[in-house]
Image 1 (cartoon, helix red, strand yellow):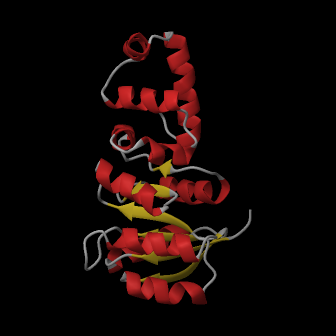
Image 2 (tube, rainbow, N blue to C red):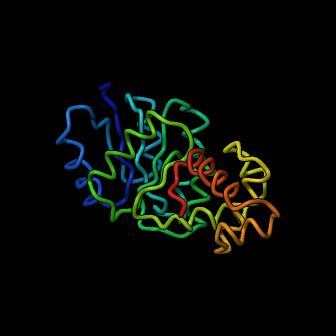
Length: 202
């Protein structure tokens, strides 16, 4: 497996040390560096080899990580940003997507989940959600956004309609009745949505 270089940006020393312990056990990953704030992150990034940046959302300023993500996405297109945060609200997850992040992982994740997400963002397309983040957080958040943002994931108009129904808690049959289509068609669309967004949708 190709070696993956990761960089950690988090105001918590304990968190950075914990991530080091997770990754230092595996020879397919190499730690490029670390930063306690986004200024250090953006200063160091051009000087190191990096494939994935793990970052928190809040530093000295609330939401500071989102702006750093936007700058990384613009100036370092080969670097994938993963948010590693204790926030689990739909606003934070959708803001991460809008900023250009490739994954969102909860700080209560297992080491295996963290490692799997790193591999996923380096191999796949789309947006990956950590296993401890409730799936409805993303569907509800996306349903609150304009259709144009949803189309970033190449979702069709029908798939967008179905996401909005799911976010309201409708079953496949209820969704089918509302949209005047077959329940089997709804299930088919749900599979396509799951593939595009890398989600598990019940």
